Image 1 (cartoon, chains in turn blue, orange):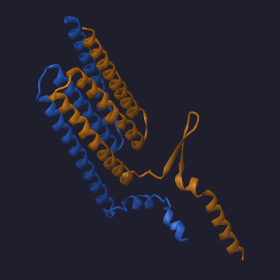
Image 2 (image 1 turned 120 degrees about the vertical axis):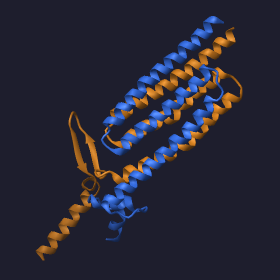
Image 3 (image 1 turned 30 degrees about the horizontal axis):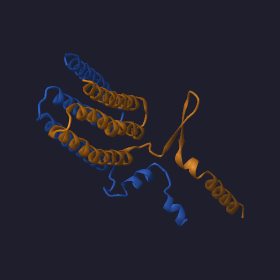
Image 4 (image 1 turned 45 degrees about the vertical axis):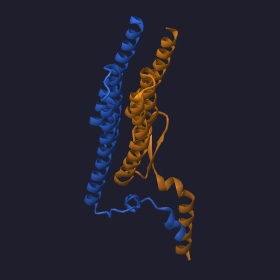
Length: 123
Length: 137
């Protein structure tokens, strides 16, 4: 029985070490990333890995409430991503004076000189 | 005793699979160049990585209320992750200034081609022929 508990300890410790290294690599990407969406993707992935670490701790330390912390962290991470996306879309549209509706992607493409499919049909 | 070791083996296999998925997700995010490609790699870790890691923890924990909570984490994450991915992709499609460029990888060098040059090549040639004909008349 001693041996199997040691095996579980080794498994969880290895998983925690690997996840820590991956979080550091994701932080490097979120600093280097050229665009704002690259940074948001990296931060979202850091949140995923922190949820995994919290779940591993909840099993390791035999604490019941850390699973609740996991769930709340997932909700707040999702909320943060949605708010960041809305804020940066609004900032960009305000800077470029584009109307904020569903045709904003078409406006962006039209400013770059890409012809949309509908215009060709009308011609 | 053997039952406990079988359970340990199952949870270890699931944990290693999840960690392999997470390593490949981080590798892809650091390797790809455009944000939409990076999102494709990050979605792998958001779905399969967290599924296998938490499945391994549920096998360790056994059949109890805690593993139900961990299952709730997976269920919530599988609902929330595609939505946030959609939001990020809409942000990228609205704000990317070089979305129309199609990047073509050749041996060693990287060449950018405009999208309308590729898709409308023959149509554009026929249009220019018409213009030239009109001028000639």
